[in-house]
Structure formats: C-alpha cells, structure tokens
Image (cartoon, rainbow, N blue to C red; front, side, top):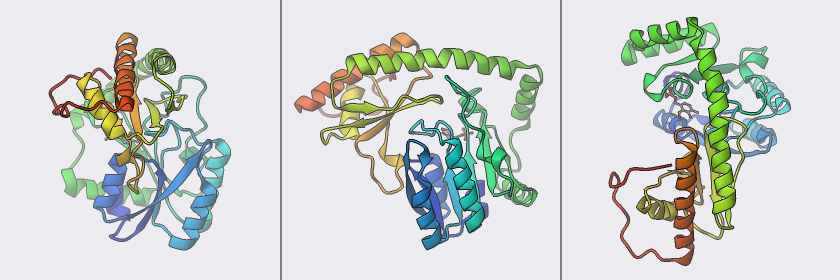
Length: 306
Ligand SMILES: Cc1ncc(COP(=O)(O)O)c(C=O)c1O
C-alpha cells in the first residue's frame, strides 16, 4: 500500500502476474492503477509478453512474486529472473519483488531473490514475518534504494506513525537468540509432510477432472476444475461439509479464473488434511451430479477443516 501510494498515480499502468496476490491487486487498484496482467509459464512470468507491454504502455511498476508464488506456487527460473532484470533496466521500470515465502522451500533452495541479482537498483524487495512466525505479527521489511526508503518512511509517518515497536523488539530478540533459524528448520521439516498428505489425498480421493500443481515450497496448492465447473459452486457444496478454500477469481486482474481455487496445506494436521480432501471430493462429486437442492450455507455457520 505504501509503495502504491508512493509510486502510482491514478491511471498509471502497473504490470502484475496472472494470477497474482489479491492484497496487492487491491492496493494498486485503490491507488488508481490500471492493471496489466502477464501470464506465467513453467519458468514464471512470461518476459516475451512483458516486453510487448513495456513497449506499448510504459508501465510505472512491475509487481512480481518470483518464489513460491501466491497463489500458483510457481518459482521463476534463474534465467527468467535475469531477463526480467535486464528488461527493467532497458525500459527503466522499477520491479516490486514480494517474497513472503522464499524461506519455505521443501526440496532444494530456490534461485536467489531478484534483489540480490540486481546490480542497477531497479528492484524493491518486500518480505514479512507473517508466514514464517505468525500472521498476527503484522511485521514486514523491505530493501530498496535510499531515496525510495526515505519517501516510504515519510508516507508511513503520516499513515500510522510507525510499526508497533514492541513487536519489532520481540522479533529482533527472537532472531538474536537464533530461534528463527531453528523455527525455519522445523517448518521445513513439518510443512512438506502436510504438503505430501494433501497431494496424496488429492491423487487418491478426487475424481477425474480436477487439476493441481505440486508446489516446491510456500503454502498453497492451486487447483483448476475441468468440465466447465465453477469454484463458487464447489465452495457452496464444500462449506456444507465444513470445508473451505479460497476462490481463485479475486487473484485475477481481469476477472478470469472462475474455475480456480487455492488450498492451504500448512495449518492443519495430516489427518485433518486427508479428511478435508475427502469431503472436498464428495462436494465435487455432488456438484458433478448437479444435486444442489439445499440453499447455500451461511458464512460462519460451520467451522472449516481445510
Ligand atoms: C504475497 C503476499 N504478500 C504479502 C502478504 C501479507 O503480508 P503481511 O501479513 O505482512 O501484510 C501476503 C499474505 O498472504 C502474501 O501472500
């Protein structure tokens, strides 16, 4: 939000991945940005499409989540990172790199952040403790050229004066005592088990016609329904069985993605994950049979499992 307010004026074009983190899309929209979506392939954001947009629209900012993207779980390859940086340099556009999940790798470590490859100072790096400590901490950090930091600090001052100092002190102490590293090691041991439980359950329990990724890190399994089904209808059936997920549509700048949804594998035990996917697959089977006779359950009526 601070960056959107610092860098974007109403009507400015901003490049985002398709799909992309919905919180950022909302912040850019609130600043009046015109969002330009760029599709991704197996190596991340498609820089060939990006270059055409850079030439045509001269955007103000490129927003990317290169590592364990929210929601798709994808990782941008090293080569693509280098191409992206050289495009930013050629067309003189800043890159906003949002990286809350980079420490949560379950196989091998991901390629280095764009910021660490950036020799020209085009990248602004953002991260947060929300995903590696706990969501309520609301504490993040950024790495940016000095003039950008100064500008953001002054916007921060008139927005909310400063971030809670007690939380900053507690996290600093946590890191100095070496607890963050051991906590990360625990997460890197535990989360892949939960990921495996979810992927195995999806493979064993869901009927044909549901597609998903196998994320090498992060929090999410990104799913797509086949056969013209819509995630919103699946959600209605799933909530009746006390399972919820996040609809995919809000992650698309252009309102697409009605057949997509996001599952999170980090919060629940392996047993609950398996049970949640079993119920999800029943919901899907019911949807397929077109048996939606009862009215949709009201929000808050059921406690979610996944
Ligand atoms: C890509 C991305 N950026 C930022 C955030 C939010 O971080 P914070 O809780 O520090 O505001 C999230 C949380 O979902 C996220 O996925």
